[in-house]
Image 1 (cartoon, rainbow, N blue to C red):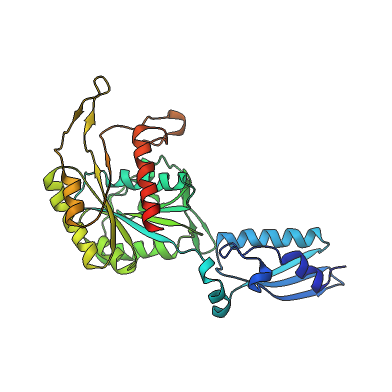
Image 2: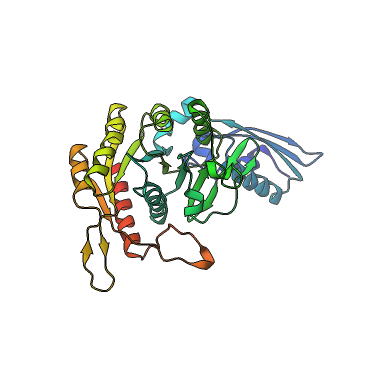
Length: 339
């Protein structure tokens, strides 16, 4: 026969999915009621975060353990841990680092950089989300070969996961690649929905692929995320770097921390001779990094990923591809700088 003490013993070693502390350590088990005649056990549990996919996993675990112990039916209620209890374990509660990928102009490969940085961080074992915040020019789903769409669970949108990265994009919510004809306030509302109404779960990094330039969406990001980090993408051409400096200046004015510059399309390397051709000139990335008083994180050559027809993702470089290795190196630098 189940008793309150027995139920406590069964559940107290379950861990809060966000604090990674046991229920005993967080005083999570707040109420137990047992109806012996009906074999019903009712439990009230406090978690660091409620209404998440992780809560559903806890629910399944609790129900299964109690039924294995003899309960015929189980009733569960979840509540949030008190602020006092949370304060005891605040150091254990992971904080998501927001990283915006920005550029001064289009056509420099910013979205390709966003995708491959997200995938590379996931390959390093990090929990990663990616927001395609380029509302007009959304491209992330196609670049990653995503064909499914998000689902709604309760009141939350569940992002699509590919290559270990959770992805949300305007492209999931329009039909047949239709153009988005919206004005500034509507764009801001959609972006806010991506933060508030999507069930991201626990993330180490949430990357945002911003539209090029310094328009409405970029301004909204700067106001919504005051603690955001930024990476500026440019080509080596002096004009591209000059325009990219505007995006960097905007970040600095809004107190975003620029953690580095990535120079894309740095050169073309012949497979026959190994000779490098500097198609777009030299030095733009280095000069931009110096101007913004930050680091040049890496230089990426012109080259296509190897396409796998069975697992098609036209813009994702394999981990052992020469450019994939450069992305992994950049990802390691980012984690070191942030940690």
